Image 1 (spheres, rainbow, N blue to C red):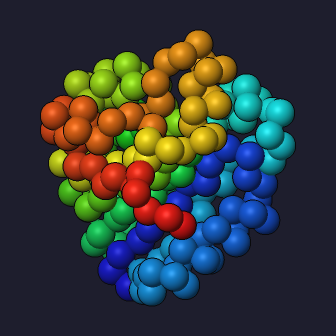
Image 2 (image 1 turned 90 degrees about the horizontal axis):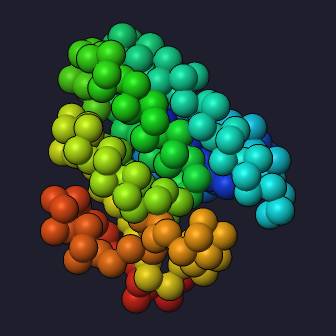
Length: 185
């Protein structure tokens, strides 16, 4: 295939659950490219939020190396799909690649899909300012009724999470947004 999808799992997801998630995603969507699971060391336990956050951030260099190497293959189209806290690793890795000007990766990147991103809204705004190459490829899935993100918002001192932010606010920032607030399942 000439395309690859790098899937970055989220918080509270152990390796076997991450394998099941990417497999289900490929099956449900009919994706025909090369699916690649980037798994970071989540403890897979609800109570280990801070551990998972630190682990996700620690993985950013490994993810940037994977993406850089993928850009140097014969693959023509790269998509990065991150869920929940995996968006922290994905955004950080893209920031590293932006700073390094990894031209072969950027020429092949077609999409960065952020599903329920567990990222502080102010930090996300800073990413948008610092990463112009990422903005064109960016798609953000939000839901105003995401219970998990509302819980983590409280834990984070009331700071809004991107995945639970108003879609119109993000659209005004030039972000392509898919609002799932009214979707039942």
